[in-house]
View 1 (cartoon, rainbow, N blue to C red):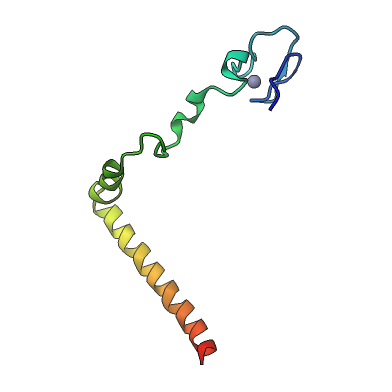
View 2 (cartoon, helix red, strand yellow):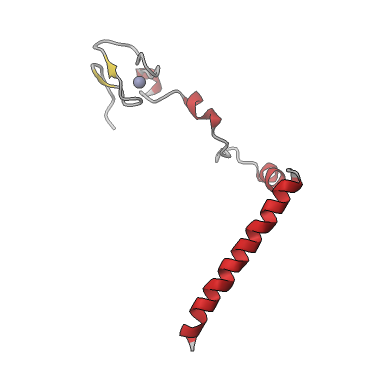
Length: 97
Ligand SMILES: [Zn+2]
């Protein structure tokens, strides 16, 4: 992607960036950051980082931690999956004969 040069619409947020502006007034994107939105914006998302993904920590969080409520929800999730599989089998089984 070609480098963005003001004046023009900010590639990060779409606001107009005036000629010779060093950075976008709206989102703070600038040439040195590659006209991308501040990475801080994404901090709110609770996604495991691919690069330093800790499997043990992930398992701990998913299966070890959490209260009874979380475990019960997981149980019903599995019940729902098994029911769906049973229904799919019931629908498909007649075609196999
Ligand atoms: Zn912007």
